[in-house]
Image (cartoon, rainbow, N blue to C red; front, side, top):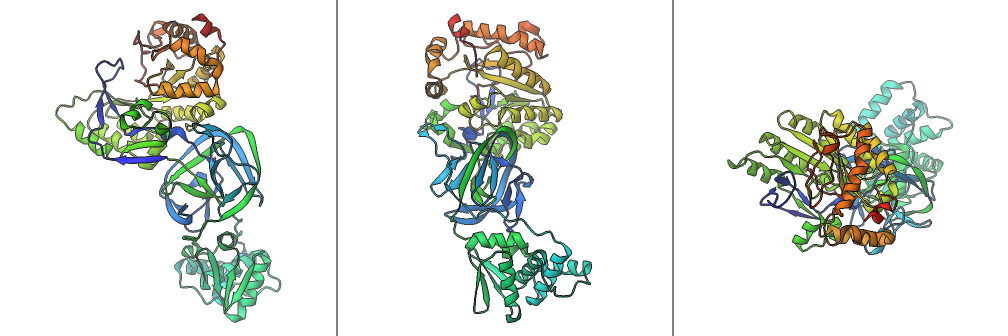
Length: 595
């Protein structure tokens, strides 16, 4: 994924007069869409923090300092965005027993480069994917920390004192706290247990240890060198003693295992920054769990992070890309133009005396809440600029990143009309993975609708695009509308596939690759035009209308207000938000034969 950061001269765009869209103005902070890739892990996956400790992925917050990689070395980076989704789970088990639950589209760094968890297709052919025996890059699985029992606390006090006392505030604070709690624990144990040993080694390291380039060392007084070495061996560490310095063998992996296992207090001594990245552990098994999990993802400054000892990837209108001499297929998914000054430019345009505060629609070309928004955070400034100027606006999205801005949208709705639309075309997870691999799952988008409604905002759902012979059976539409109705959605708009130039060529390639048996039928339906044959649109209206009625989703105008728009009719269901056609399955073949 390449992000082209540009300074735009204008952000507020007028819709061409010949267009039949029911709005005149749009704002698109991005060109291209980073929805083309999705990466996510289970919430309990431990992430390597910048202080050398581990924290569950679900508990990370924007601004947290963690480790990533750059030029083959571990470096500190920041969490720029954090979100969750619901996705099918896969369990990747390593030879050392480490287990990671991820989506099938997640990528890990192997010694042969980035690889997805499960096979799949991309425009250049089959994408790289993991196999049993592949070796993943990283530190190896994280060790379980100590229990901080009385024995651990006693061991820590002995270690920090015999190590020469520490001037570090974190170590002093811990020692004073332990001494106040366990003032009677002063005897050296006859047979130290593992917890006492962990505390002792933590104290000695805080007083006389350091870590540089991923190598951990302790300079201990000769009187306790033997105790340090014995303690390390008791915990299965390999070490050597040279000139009074005990050095841990095994590099970054063992240095981190030591820090996690004994938990020294001094954060700055737990660093692995600058250490070289090396291959870690072979994959023992990859198993499809065949059920949905709540999975989490982050955006970082380096584009990756360390998940339970493994280097893990994270994330960041087709025809408009051709205006930039980029193609509407792969470039649209991988070359994203970011208008970094969008909020400032928009605020200036809205201050113009000529601006009459007409409705502004967002999400009409490219999704403003695609994954790149997690990194660039353009929408908060755009929302504030529109609200401050008294301009009503609406947002159409597939992206659950929108949940981040719900408080801001609710506040804006106090002064201007705000509409939210969520695009959801299907519930079939296999088809979703094939057609829109980087978008949040259907369940995640249904949950987004619930959250929008709970925030007091209206939320329409765009069942778009309906794909002939793939997503328009009565059973599929009935199931989808039932789940939409359960969210409290305030309206539904149904839109069949619209094949504009750019999108047309991209979709044709996908259809030929995935459903070659449907190609002739689609030629009959679309011919040389952008819209499906009018007879199909009338057929779809007849099918969807009683289903909308069944689930209480008919617009205010009743059955007469339901219509499927096309080039010869511009009917938009009453009460719906303006929309473009995003991209997301099937029917009996009767529709095609009807033509």
